[in-house]
Amino acid sequence: MTYPASEVVEEPALFAPAPEVAPELREFWDATSEGRLLLRRCTVCDEAIWYPRPVCPFCHSTRTVWEQASGRGHIYTYSVVRRGTGGYADAPYVLAYVELAEGPRVMTNIVDCDTDAVEIGQAVELVFHRTAEGTALPRFRPAR
Amino acid sequence: MSIKRKAFIVGAYEHPGRRLPDTSVPQIHAEVALGAVADAGLTLDDVDGLFTGRDTPGAGGLSLADYLGLRNLTYLDSTESGGASPLYHVGHAAAAIAMGKCSVALVTLAGKARSGAGGGAAPPEDPFELIFGARPPLASYALAARRHMYEFGTTSAQLAEVKVAASLHAQHNPNAFLRKRLTVDDVLNSPLVSDPLHRGDCCVVTDGGGAIVLVSPEIARDLPRRSVAVLGHGEAAKHSDGGKVDVTYTGAASAGPRAFAEAGVTPADIDYASLYDSFTIAVVEQLEDLGFCAKGEGGAFVQDGGLVAPFGKLPFNTDGGGLANNHPTNRGGITKIIEAVRQLREEANAPVQVPDCALALVSGIGGDLAARMRSAVLVLGRQDA
Image (tube, rainbow over all chains, first blue to last red; front, side, top):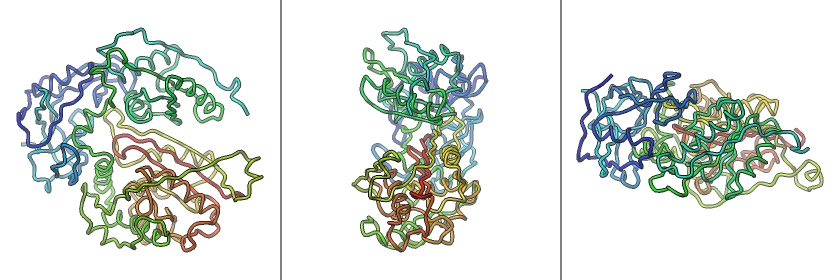
């Protein structure tokens, strides 16, 4: 399944540090720079794997492949962090686990939202925030 | 008692690579782990003991357990002794196997001394968690608290009751960092730091430390002080499970039953509990996970003085705990053990000494409540118990 690319915000309001890119995740981070979120899928047990890695944490097969995520999901839990540190010192911001339509619960931020109106179960959609090194962080905003 | 012929090496694998610029350190650990268990004719699902040194990314092997999807760990050892670490690990693994603490032990070593640049020796989860401002450990506990409230109706006032009980105990402890007697409203009126947690839901930040000495029964008999028997121990790792993370329980759900089984007792037998209290929500989840109440009923359990010594349903943290007394260098495990020893020696502060205290439980969780943690539970008994 191929989904349209999500928006990549070039100058995000929220701190967007560049990730350290593990060699076997180069393809994942290259995809983020184009607005696509990849999941690792095990071809033996068919589980979607998060965070991505070559070995399946469910059946320990190394027969895993990339697939594009739909970018849709809902909020599993969240917190409005009011005392951030480092680059996040300019709080508040919303930290959350989003449950993707494909199943995995991914840690992320909820952006472009009223922080007081965020709710568990709320439908969200993917938006990318560009980092200084060209990659982009997968974040979510209320579904439009 | 000896390890002699109690454990056998059945698998061994040396990575063929000498230059591995395109493989991360955790992935090299994964490849050698898979190679060794395959050599043994086993799978990673058979592994219940993990032994790692400082070369493993992350804290104490936990990130590797998460990376590999090890779900059946009953024993973790991360002794660090430089290049000799794996020899310590084999010795410790043999002792653990001899004692029945685990039956299939995995020892790994991996790294990229030649092509380290861009190597990924940082915890593999960092680009997917820490990068989003998951301020450790506070935000993780907040994520857990929010979901616990959503699923079970737990309230901020119930969480505050945990802090209130700790403060009631701390007022009798002349060394406690916070000796002010707090009310639920005091906690609820303190600033939100990471919704739904208030500052009052957090432990104190202190300098200090503590230590414990254990000896054989023969030596204990000849010493003048009252001793405390170690009756049971259990441990577990809980991690993000490949994306199926569940923040409503702690590793104590697995570690607790192992400790109770070894001690041959049940939660109903426990007279006093030291529960890791970095944040109030941690206490509520451990009460449920250890079987002191059903899952979801921790909030109700702590109401109406459920944790208050000496006569609450389960007197806890009678020194004031990490929430009010002491949390030296942000590691609360040692003070939890020390207060349990005081209770079993009948040396707790008099107003909070549990009468006829014969059995104590100590529950420790390390790491973060949402994504990954190690959990250890001890059952301790009075000298004559």
